[in-house]
Amino acid sequence: MIPIWIIAALATATCFAVSGLLAYDAARALGATVFSFVRMALVAIGAGGLVLVFGLDSRMNGDDVALLCASGVMGVFLSDTWRYASLARVGPQFQSLLGTAVAPFALLLGFLVLGQTVSILSLIGTVMIISGLVAAAAARSNTSDTRFTGEPAGLLAGIGFGLGAALTQAGSVLIAAPVMAKGIDPLSATFVRSVAGALSLLLPVLLSAPRRNQIQSMSRTVAKQVVFSAVVGTGLGMSLQLFALASGPVGIVATLSATTPLIVLPLIWIIGRSRPKALAWLGAVIGVAGVALISNAS
Image 1 (cartoon, rainbow, N blue to C red):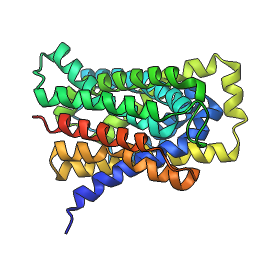
Image 2: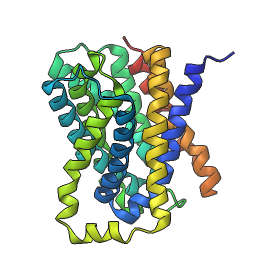
Image 3: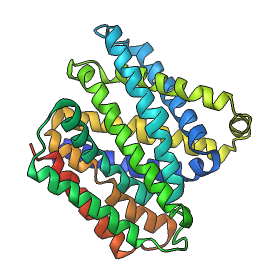
C-alpha cells in the first residue's frame, strides 16, 4: 500500500498545477500586482479566521514576527508579484518549471549567507534544472501553441520575472527558517506572512487609479478564479505539503511536491486541447530530476 504521505506530496504538486491554471487568466486580466494583492488578502483572511479558532502561537516574540513580516514582504510583494507577471507572459507550464530554480537559488544563498557547503550532486542538479529550462524554452514557438502558452513576445521578460520570483522566494524561506526551526505553528506563521505581504501590496494598489478600477470592475468569473486559486494552491496545497513533511522524509517530499511541471502538462493537454511538444516533456523531466538531486544531496 502506498504511504499516505506520498499521496499527499503528489497531491500538493497537483494542487499547485491546478492553481497555476486557475491563476493564468485572472493574472492576465487583473495584472500581477492586483492579482497578487487580492489573492494574498484572501489568504490572510482565511488564515486569520483559523487563528481566531485555534489561537496564535504564544511562543512567537517580536523578533520572530519581524522576521516573518520581512519574509512575507519578500515572498509576496516581490516573489508572488513577479511569479504572476511571469505566469501571464510564459504560461503555467514554463512558469512552473522556472519555479524549480528556487532549489539552486536556495543553495546559492545558503552558500553566500550561511557558509553552507554545496555538494557535487547539488551542482549536477543545478545544471539539470538549467538544462530543463533551456529545453522548455526551445519547445516554444513564435506563435501561441495553446491558450496557456502566454505571450509569444514575452519570453525573455517572463524568464526574468520567473527567475526573480525564484530568487526572492528562496530568500523569503531563508529569512523565515530560524523562526520555523523553533517549532512555531505553521498556521500562525502563515497568518503573519500573509498579512505583511498583503499590506505591502496595499499602497501600490491604492495609489493607482487603474488598479483600483480593476478590483471594482472585476468580473464574477475572474473573482472565482482568484478565490479557487488561493484555496487550491495556498490553502489545500500547503496543508497537504505540511502533512507530507510531518510524515515522510524531507528530501523525497520536496521532490514529489516539485513534480508540478510534469503534472501540469497533461492538464494543459486536456484543457487546452493541444499536445505539449516532446521538448517540453523532456525539459520538465530533467528539471524535476534536478530538484530531486538537490533535495536528496544531503
